[in-house]
Image (tube, rainbow, N blue to C red; front, side, top):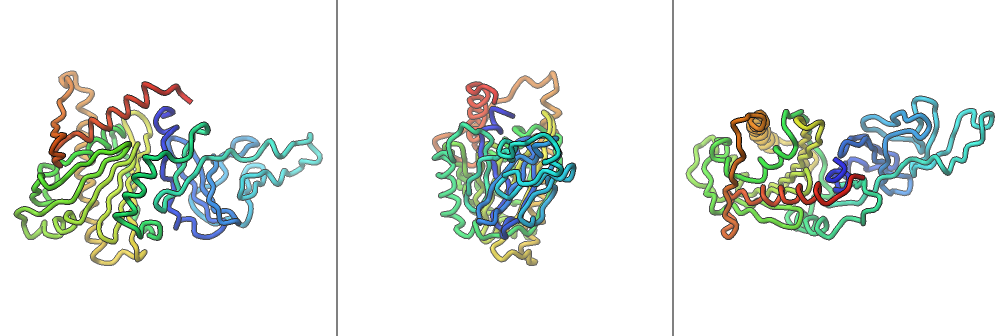
Length: 337
């Protein structure tokens, strides 16, 4: 968790979630409880969600603050920039240097309209590869910073987060597991690998049934991205899907799927598309949970990846190898924080 999630840049909110000064959102990222808030100066900041007095959680859920953050335990009060402003009975108690008890900040940066955070205090601002995928996403979807959430799904999967990510890094299984997709010509589904990201390209429809027509129409316009370490993006026309995976323990992960639309509304066509994706993700849940159980079998001796690096075919599992190499590098080369 330290070597990977303690150093990665993780999306924690969309900028439109924090539209007004005082807007806040409390969440968990990389196993750490944090909150993000838009200050009166318009800047978005993130802090660890813990009072500096006796470690009580400060905020829950989403809402809007009126200039200050008050701890619900002893009413220590902080401004929206994290400075300690009020200590009840502070004059009668021992003198307290308020400058020593400000909230612990978390590095933040805007990424294609999302607020991202990083827990590595010694790390640089977002690295070049993060800005690279940001530019590519915005090239495909320039409206992304102004889009608004229209659907949210959360589920606890009985699977390790790496297992889940690997499933999304190949479409070798698509024709078997996802019949609602119709028939793919996998020679036209390209899987490009970059520095800390990969992209699965668009599909041309093969023979299809009437029930798969909408799925194939959507798939033809689809581009799906993976971003280090636990993030899946999917872009389709005026719709954007963000999927985050929060490790809970070695064999369990929280999956959060968010759907954004340029209009901010889920019309009938978008609802039908979202229902399709709900089915597709549910099909994947049964797969990754079965794999997780299989990992514990003494009869499993380790598999072989099916790769075709030169042709970059969609069925190639080269994206999994890329991901596994990054995991090995992060865990093997970094000392814990």
